[in-house]
Length: 370
Image (cartoon, helix red, strand yellow):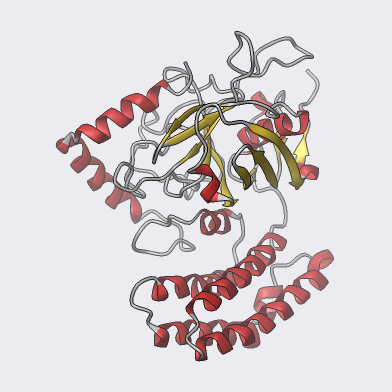
């Protein structure tokens, strides 16, 4: 049975093994100091789109400064509605766009300069709009405009990626790889869900997934496991097989555990971070956001994943952000960016009616011939 390890972790969490949790809390706090400079100090990030922005392999402090100023707006409006602090965030973003445009463009390849300049112009227009909503103290419109601005920032950051950041080990050249990002649209029996899968952090896992989507593998498959505030699993094909059988090789396509740790240049393959003695380290893509996509696998085999995957239904009381037992044990390869509310409606027996790649298929690299 896939994902057996989850049952054990869930039991540990819910039965409240105090000593274990205290130890993990201590380790998590120690590990927080290892985050790269692009990651903000303080509470762990629980927004998938923010995590995706942070995971991009770029080094431009100015765009990160712009990103953080806009992200902070929702923090200030979440409870106390600190409009003065929001005004400060907006003023900071305005100064960056007006005074540091050359620093933003410095990381953009020549072929994408015109596109980047257009994005910056759209950002400036958007800042003007948000200032009007700020003056009216219109919380809803301010947050909507913030989201639109961050979408533009994300596009600008993607334009800054010069090349794929590392070489995937040759041992996995027989598997499809995603050398970039792709957007997947799921049509389910309860509504549509859109996810971004990240080949920069998990090229083998994401490549396998995008390849299966493109083959139509998931069309019509039912959700086989649905636990509220925990996990929603799908990808078990009809018949006795529990994963994808490659029609060329007639073999089960096994996908290795793949986890990119913050500060590492390449992912760790084939072993959990705990077994590698790296239980203090934090993955670039953590189990801290509702709608994380992760590869299911047999509990005793880190390299036994294939087609089954799950949406993680983040529940902070069970898995505190940055302090849970799942990071480094399963491969996260993306996050839901639209339709999160649909996930909570889906039950075992509901289906993925169709899944399709709507962006980024050109980043899929087919397996190399043996």
